[in-house]
Amino acid sequence: MNIQSGAPADAAGPVAAPNLASELAAPTVSRAYRCQCGRPVFLRNSQCLACGTPLGYVIDRLGVVPLAPVRGEAESKGEGEGDAEAKIDGEGAGASEGECEGESQDAEPDTFTVFGNPDGKRYRRCANLLTAASCNWMVPAPREGDDPSFNTDGLVPGYCLSCSVTRTIPDLSLERNGELWRKLEHAKRRLISQLLALGLPVVGRRADPENGLAFDFLGNMPGAPHVMTGHEHGVITLNAEEAEDAVRERIRAEMREPYRTLLGHFRHEIGHYYWDLLVQPTPWLDEFRALFGDERADYTAALQRHYEQGPPPDWPNRFVSSYASMHPWEDWAETWAHYLHMADTTDTAMSFGVDATNVELASDLFTTEDLWQPEHPGATKFLDFLNGWVLLTNVLNELSRSMGQPDYYPFVLPRAAVGKLQFIHCVVTQQRDTTLSAAAAPDVPLPPQTGPAASAPGPASVAAPAPAPAPAPAQSQAQCQQQSSPQS
Image (tube, rainbow, N blue to C red; front, side):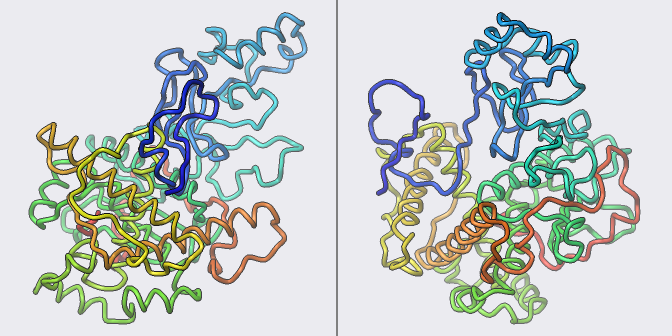
């Protein structure tokens, strides 16, 4: 396996014994964040509870970072040598109480830099910070002379990227919907932060009215058709009731699903979106059909057959879930969601140095013979990632059992699904490499494999998710093709 250190770059002390972090090559970024005071902070935090430092998710940093209020021009000019010394000291170990709490008398209102970088890029809070959505993402506040790529193009004024792609929110005149909206936005921010880390394009409807991404969070209304979770032409519709734990658990039990989460719904439906973007219009399509089947098969008939007859008896040997056996589109979306689950969980485990090397395995590790393309240059690294996941899930299941809870990972990953996971990994990593290349040389045309809509990876949206009741007509505007799935 590839050996990588799981400790921070500035960590001191002897080399630790091998653990998951040193055994596993995960595909994205750290999920462990720290305040300037050294305390751990988390993806949802907007302020450090230990020292009061403001925090925010900054896309440029792909994580939650400590922030410092931008001081006014008069204060900056009045700094003496002692002030400069104090500022340097504060960058390393902390700041004065007033600075930590954002109370600088001459600070520019609601404008921040990343802590320790007072001359760096400036940001403002998302307008949804103080709404039920409780968004802690930051919005670029570009100045003259900043890199042209640092802008708010495509963003709804005052809103971050994640909130800008929310098109419809639940009716907030109903008391319970504020809490449901909060849960929906938390799950979506987790999703989008991972998509950005993977280098996948997150493009909204304002930048691309035809293929851009939009989310409608709808509620069931008396006399109206039941809201179905699904995707159509870039619009992802989620029934807001799925954010209610009791409702979601009831549906999971009724449908005999081993696993059903709100984040899983997002990951499944975004899989349909990226199939349209990264597979259907590209040379990947032929390989997709060889692995997943021909998506031109009648979807409506397949859906009816699945609910009338159930999945084929041998589905556990060929698919990641029973719902994946319904149609090639659903096989792709279920496998895609599974890949995102695996990537984010292993990134988090690596970030915290989880040790998974001493667990007793419930199944054998996978080999190159199980891969779709064993000769691929990245095959070994993918196999490391996959087998690291097997080790990790055994640890997580034991932890769940020790608390008397159901298995954290109630699946047995079939060998036939491994090739499909590698295919998705190759699609994702090629897109990531293309995005990085385009960022380094923006005038170089993108290769056709990425798909036409992926050539403009800028954020955008159609309408702001304002903290007010969504208009009634929006409650039935999305026509959904795919239903929610067991993987979700």
